[in-house]
Image 1: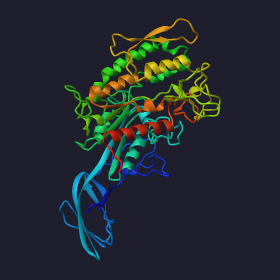
Image 2 (image 1 turned 45 degrees about the vertical axis):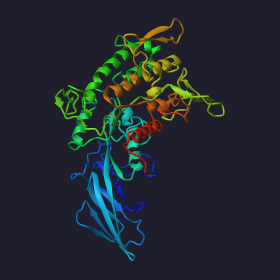
Image 3 (image 1 turned 90 degrees about the vertical axis):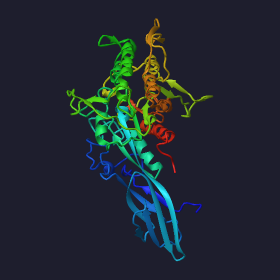
Image 4 (image 1 turned 90 degrees about the horizontal axis):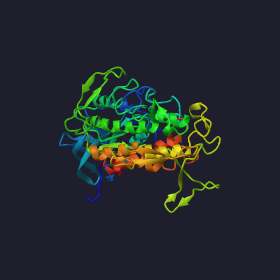
Length: 486
């Protein structure tokens, strides 16, 4: 036969998306068992004990079919009067044949089907957990996991749902372990917020030997104490020059980036082939912050090394320029984007998080919140993906212009957060993605409401920001061969 008249679909495992659909997983029950709101959201533990998945075989394209006899892998025939049959099959290839009987006689067709359940894992910090975009879509406590501010509105959760929709012949098991505040050390490798190390919990959830199809994460923001840096930027004039615990803020960030670089091989040692000569070791199996017990665990099997996607952080520093009419201003390179100016907000009442302009976290701040010079430093020293100094012994001299004028201060710039993340691809064989950073340019903190991807009160993405993250992750899943549209 030229045309395939037998088809198959694998039952979805991520659960319902209702109403709408709206692109948000609303019911995880099918994947993880009973959902306990605020406690276990997004973590799938419900792998089928027999390793088999529900597959629907469809021979309805045969005209006039009245009797259907199916054979799977040469086993005894399954006879039915309906053109669809639901069976449970293990992952992998299966030989399927169907004999269809009708008034015109019998016709047989054979085919090979490939049953696949994609295991998609979300690790990392608040930018992976969906912090800020709770179930209400606003900053609040309506999270699937409150201690970790973990939400089904996260980019990782949205991407997993879209991946399941792209191909009806595959299902997706989504394991979301990201936790707000997590670091490479306290989070991935050690306990955090009462949670076990994410890599340990993942190893306990996976069936033995089961390879993961896609792992994504943001990590590093808390390793450089992002919250402390933001606090300085909000409260101190010329924050890069100000002191935190006796150390200049700029210098502290640069030092902690070097420490992050040195720490990541311990994380890489736990994924796929690992790092030569380095075992996978985590600590704190109880989840208590004071638990220092070291545990050696097997490496997490991967379908391929590049299926680990380390995500660069989005750009909060730039906004799209609009005319008085509201239309975007275009240049030869596309829409015009500029660095946020002094004051950081466009006009009174333009926020969507219920916090008035100039009151981050509801607390009065110095006039202007952040200066344009501070925004420019944040872009250059934290978020730019290009390595400013390939040789750390020869740092780039970043010219910081003090807010009140005066002499320019030359700050030694060796690394940025996103540049360090970008190193992990060639170092560990992973995929490093700056797609979120690229797509968020112009949608930063001071953008007009129509363009804004961030809650100004907490410097974290809102729904539109996580939708942008999900789009990039789905594209990577396509490029890596994890999913393909039918």
